[in-house]
Image (cartoon, rainbow, N blue to C red; front, side, top):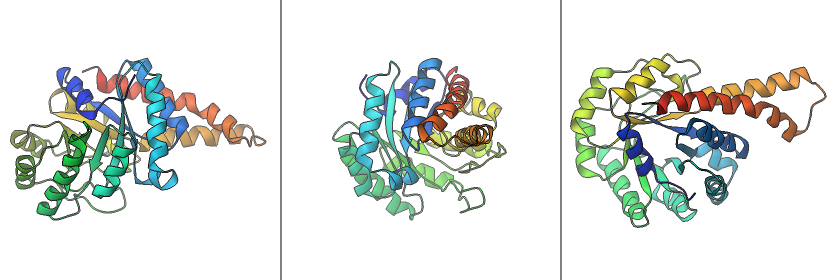
Length: 276
């Protein structure tokens, strides 16, 4: 089927008190596994091309790859640009056929973040593309620190922008290899009180499974980004395949052995998030 917009799948998630998963993609094999997982779970999938992916492969190729996967799928597939930093990056993705873009101006002063977001929203809405933005900063495990989203920021940003989803910082962190994030539930509830759009948490791999369910079922978090735990599984399977067969050298053979475990984990995660 044609690519779905982020707005469409988030609306479906809202109707069932569930969360969509934004899968951080690195290539054809993992993106294909995530779509297959969506088919098995009966859930939509959001295929994301982040800065690392875009450094390794041009945006037009990502767009064509995501469209190819969507055409043969029976579940909604979103092609999402993750962490676009400029209007130009987002426009390039829109022209490459992406159905959703994230403009990340979270490192900028609030007024500049709002202006940047509105410029991207104008370009995207003109062609029916969804927009995600971020206010507050989500940091990295053993890296750049977070700046938690404040009520003032959330209130002003919600009033002065028109976005389909808003990423916030409430204790979630990128690149956590263990699920030990401490969510600020009070701040999350307060942000929900001053906003109306679906909320997004990046760094979903660091959030406990029981907390993921709570975020969707009793709060308005409709998108969780997951990547680290899936890359850990994929990398572990590749390592095991090479250790079991030291003579193995063909890339396709190696990844073919690792892909089923990746798909199985993605399927489990989708079933947990989409059951509502």
